[in-house]
Amino acid sequence: VGIGVNAVTQADLATLRARSRGADRNSGTFRKAKHAMVNALVGKGIKPQSATGNPELDAAVDALWSRFVPVADADDRGDAYWLQRQAVGSWVVSGEVFLRRRSRSMSDGIPIPVEIQALESDMLPLTDITPNGGILRDGDVVNQGVVFNAKGKRRWYLMYRNHPSDLIDNFTTFSSTEVVRIPARDISHVYDADRPGQVRGLPWGACVLEDMVALDEYLYNEAVRQES
Image (cartoon, rainbow, N blue to C red; front, side, top):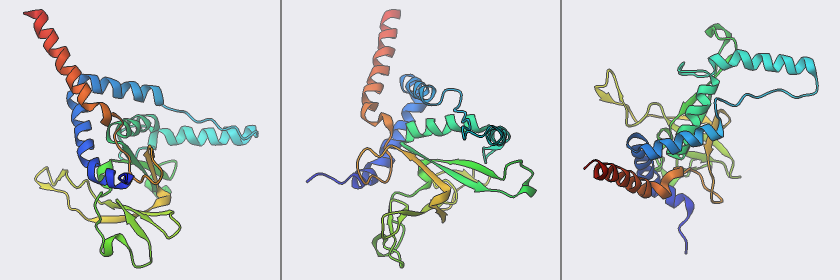
């Protein structure tokens, strides 16, 4: 009997994610491959263009997009196109990324009252953090941080309020593991569902990590040999 896909991701995702991020930090080959993927998928950014057939409506929608672009990032680090590249890069390295829609009010001083926040894979717990084996009182089921109703539809994401392994308070204490419920309608969960029923995503480079490390070691040793 084969192992269920969610049993695989729950058991292996954290380790594969850590190794993939390590390769992204330390392997020039891996990092070059990641940037090649990002450039191929989004380039300098994907710009939508309205095509309703109504020229006035198209112009109005395109104008709204132009106003949204510079204020799209909830963390104020870049514009919408920068956010696309960051999200795709995280997706490639970590296997998944979460894009959370954050509603704002006009009093916040931004022209379009919505922002997008990119969240790392770690923000959604892999292990069951609820009693009764992941079965909630209303019959909903929790699978690796995602809450499904009886019909199998995603209702909530149980996300950490802060990154569970990051430092806060001037880098003196670790974040708490407090979890909040985020409506599924506000989350875009970006990942490849390679198998039916797959809830979480695995890093793209998981199957070639050892080969990339070996290639980097070979290139280094070959450079040393040629210098000697």
